[in-house]
Image (cartoon, rainbow, N blue to C red; front, side):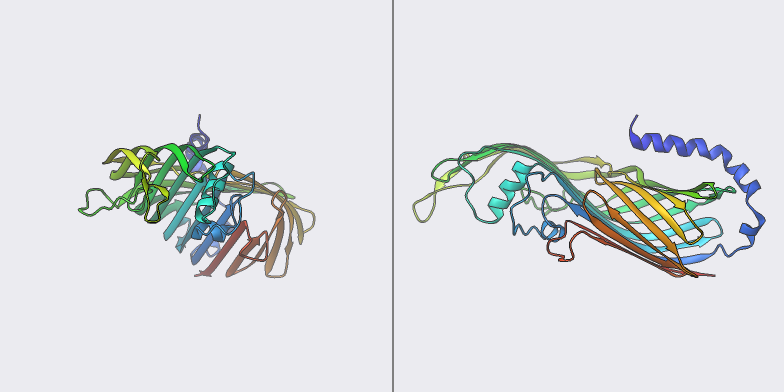
Length: 373
């Protein structure tokens, strides 16, 4: 069973208890202000290939590490309103994922830097890109028990751009610097693609749609322990009915003599360029936190986050002030500190692993402004 299907099953198992949840909501909860409107913006980026800024701009200013394998950036901003226990949001999101290996990253670096390939090495090319940009709405409802709260949110998205690319093969160079290689290419796209195929006559769709499911959980099993879980994209299904599609082989048989008498090459593509249905899923996001309240004003925390098929582990603490709180934690593997400040109307989150933003491999920013009425 897929992880996302397991989460969906758990949610379905919770639904029979919704009637009971309504019956046991505390009267004091019913009398509080449940209506609010909030503006939110979040950007989460990480890479072990290149610094995030260079990877997004495709500026390879330094050689990638030997462990280079993946990177992602996920960004969203919008407006959400709560009317009692119902929630409704409108937002724009941008998701971009890279899955690769060190050979591929090094070959890209040498190519972008106009450097020769190592003639002693054969590069095993393995690259996957996944990108989508969309506008959407989410509808949710918060079910409240005495010590347990669960809020599922169903999202509908209007795609404006998407791409899913796979490139596998080998690449090498001889002593004279002549490159030889062959690769298998499979690619769905709405506009941009490896072969720069143009949608001149609107032969394929640039718009599609998608569904997502998020679940937010809060549970206080004891007076000293609070458990929080944000599960995003645990179910996702995006579709373009008539996407651009390319599938074939790219090799270096197309050699020729250039204007200065040297041997040059023009990659030769053999395959098909058609239109086909494109259906894809987004990697799920899992964020689980446990808080141990040592005193009323001080708590220890442990946190696990899974995003872009990468695991993150945090340890830290939270301090409660008179009308606000400050939370500090550190990603113990990437040594990236994260700071969160929160009060009744404002929340700010900031995390970075290097204060020189040009060198940062991890960068998280979050902002939330809310007004209760």
